[in-house]
Image (cartoon, rainbow, N blue to C red; front, side, top):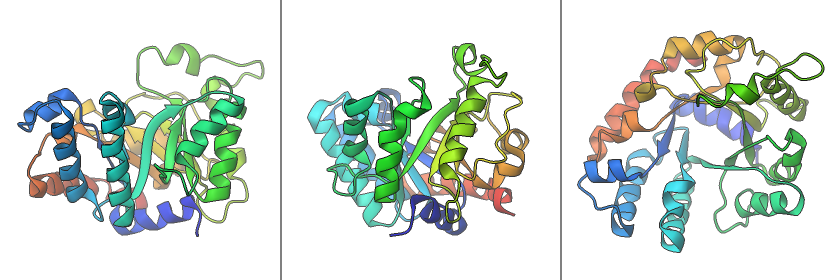
Length: 276
């Protein structure tokens, strides 16, 4: 197998940089004429898989919207992951896991091991017990050619209290996260497999991404107000490896598969400059 970073790099070259979410929250289900129950969830998810499989570099299901339906919801998620990956589409599961020791190891094995029941290509993770607390995920991902995207700078109003705080050496907490993830990508063959999550609407923070050599998932474009210009301004020399993440901007065009693909295609076209 090639590394996750290498697979992602190739997928972006083929399909463009956009990552599209599957976020089956109640408002969207109802707007599609579906009930907010397990049948509605299954129908919504199957439509998204039909629309996006083989058409986009990365699909990002939001685990929470499946978990609320219990084991039946997880079953729907598991099928979607299987079908997307069978079509050659990379799956980044948005689970934001973060813990220590054996618990973090269990979280990693749940998703990043090649034989896991819900084996995905990458997950999101929270570093606020320390980036080193995520080592079980980094280690397992390296062994299984999967990836980890670490929260660094988020757009919620509570985020700056922690992320912009200064450490003893003068760096912000966010910069220490960037630097520690960059260290784990050192020596990678091509694009590293460990990335960051950085909101497209955070504004200027002075954070330096130049040495990351890994992907940057950037939610907040489209319906949440982030633009292509925001992405270019925020990431500078690292812009080539940014994955603008969209959900509602595309999903609100459903349930027609053609309309979903058209909306996705328009966004893919608007971000072609990232790799030119």
